[in-house]
Amino acid sequence: MTALAAFVDALTALVSRTQHEPTLLAEGRAHLAALLADETWLPASHAQPRPDRYAQYPLHRDAHGRFSVVSFVWGPGQRTPVHNHTVWGLVGVLRGAELCDEYRLQGARPVAAGRCHTMQRGQIEAVSPTVGDWHRVSNALADRASISIHVYGGDIGEVRRQRLDEQGRVLDFVSGYDTPAVAD
Image 1 (tube, rainbow, N blue to C red):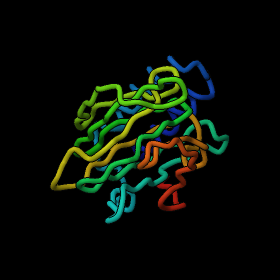
Image 2: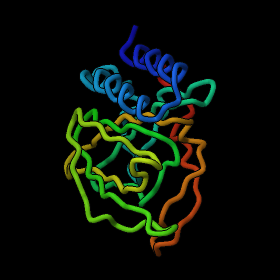
Image 3: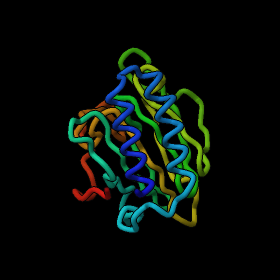
Image 4: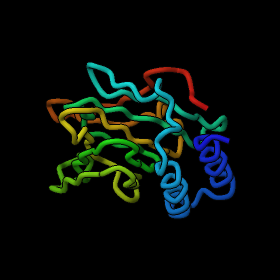
């Protein structure tokens, strides 16, 4: 069994057993840490940066929509807009490093929280409406790609979410994926 298949089996068992978010985040974190320990399992097709923006490749989409696993690939200088997720999630760095600028809601508007941190290989953070859902992520490396593995409590490519545009307006969006093929 491949590392990704073992991870998917573990997450399937977890979401079948509970929907309690603190349990999902704690136990999911342990499973994601094991997946991040060896980077050789990631298919080359899901590790390729795009020249124009970050890439979002699906690795697994649960048939019941309970979770998805996605490879995010960041070329030098690439970043997301400020955005939310609306579901629980775990983000772990597989290769390279990422910068995360945190935001908080002030009324219905996200505003900079004044906290920025760097995530190194193997580090994991949680996102959700209950633990903090708004951020902007960018590649921390100027000379090579960074890759993170994201696990979300839904099919994130189909979840309606929000982002800030260049003028600071909150806009709805659905991210989709950069390829329809899944790796498992």
